[in-house]
Length: 275
Image (cartoon, rainbow, N blue to C red; front, side, top):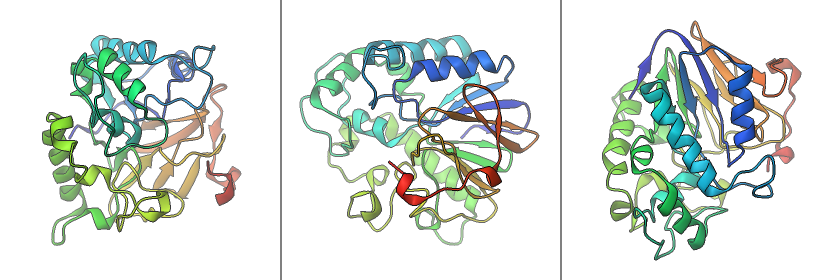
């Protein structure tokens, strides 16, 4: 697991093919030392090929080029939508079967596009999480049900990251049975598991903070509203309208199109606003 203790880090939540959102943030923030994406790169809810949403090929090529250009200074985390495509991934081949981890958006035809256009090197760079000082970035959130007893919170996170790192390289051959913990989904999100995995946890109705770890997550979407459990646990998925900056071990949430700082006290969240 990458461990960054200094510098200025941009954190961009769920993109869902909205490259205009990413490009705007990068134009607005002209200085950064590291760039972190919180996962969910495809499966747009917008009209494809308009000025906002890009098609699969353009989206995947954009992220591949970003990785080639910036190397280890950019980190791509895995999201639940990405797991759906990884589970049927076979380079340059069609998606021959359904995904055992399918979520909204996945289809066999889009799985085939993913297989054709996703760079294997980019796929093999998808991380579960990254540490920024006292903070961890992960797609949906870590909770105590993910951890083993008698081991510290950070050691548990490192162990889960190592497991993902090993299994990620096996891709569809390991995921084919649908029994990997990465695919656990609780009834809160329509599944049957006792708790959701770190890429599926619902921030408002399931997530519970863990001690000694501050968390920055995406996944739980509300229009234009970032969400705080408290000052140590923040969800910045607001339908491509917000992003975060980590510096000096503090996190600032900003609006994507004017750079205005989002303050916790200015955002009252109602559960029925989640989509």
